[in-house]
Image (cartoon, rainbow over all chains, first blue to last red; front, side, top):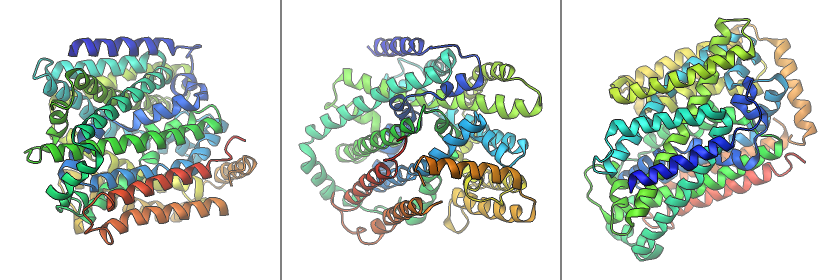
Length: 487
Length: 60
């Protein structure tokens, strides 16, 4: 039955990917940005599927099981951070269209008038996001292995996920990614919500569900609760995620794609509704595990336990399992596509100065399977460094945020400021994570953003700003934002 | 950033700060669904409403 469900999922997704091929994807903008013509609804679902990975129903549910309601707070702070799109979305969108940007790092390179900036930021993104994808791939492997009692071995699961991610991104670039993402988003949310409703009913409805928690595990409904979510821990977890919508290129690149301001709006509002429901569902999922199986040795078992419980029928269990797999793959394929565009545009484009759009596209297409196979190998190796880089990804990418904010709100920012802040604080984050250092109890991400901001500002002040470019860029935005009645 | 945007940014900042401060102070001993769980739910809904208002005129 597991194989049948997976087969049906693959066939439908491939069909959708095939249907998404419209027009010719013969240049960078059409392949990686869908000609900047994505509709609002697809953009919203795809943004949601890309943001929410297998982490939600496995990691967040496990975190809720382990630390209680603080996990909900953590995810809600992230959710609030997506409001940054309401401010930065129109700005990204306007300059993307005007200057023809394909990647967010290309935008930084142009704004700070130095292509090296684009290359450095791109390389840092790859450094963190390839390991992050590897861990997601490994997650699919463990999930399928665990839930089928080894009927699908780890390696087979990882191979399925890798091949699907390559195919979904290869068939029609962002078009096939966006359409398969949308399908997967619907699948993820419907299956998970269904299970949660069944479980809550099985446990006697919301009232008695919370009563059970209040009597048996009162700590799970408060912070710091059992101490897991101490305030400094909470801060260390939430700060990097608050800026996720700006720091992670696979989502910030999405701000270039909607067909109009209206589509951009639908994307943001659609995501907020999806995210709110999915967060609630994942947290309640974790709470149910805490109510039903209070004594698990490993919180990561919370989800497998729920799925194999009597309250969930075997067929629904398989559907949810495929839903979690879809959540992982829809995140990986988007990262894959974004990273290959970063490499083609900002790394290859920098090394080969006069490269044409066509040759960049070719490089991008060649790089997609290479990055995927790299991630696959990392997923197999189970090396400590990979796990560290993956965990560090939200904190590591955070160091780009001062440069992104500066691009739109600070004329004095310079390329030297960006590069110093990104390289130095990025390396510091990696060292802190690797050595498990937490000076003053504060996590690496907090140090990253503080050091990066200080470096960006001071180095910018002692170097010469690209005044002409900054003036032109910012005055264009000013006029257009006024015209669109945004400011 | 112009005044209307700044105004909304400040409102969001206040909501985010409430999301950090209240659960660790006022609600830290309320072990019930109407404690931090409800608070974060309400703050999230407020965020959805504010984003709706900020983006209301986009694309007109």
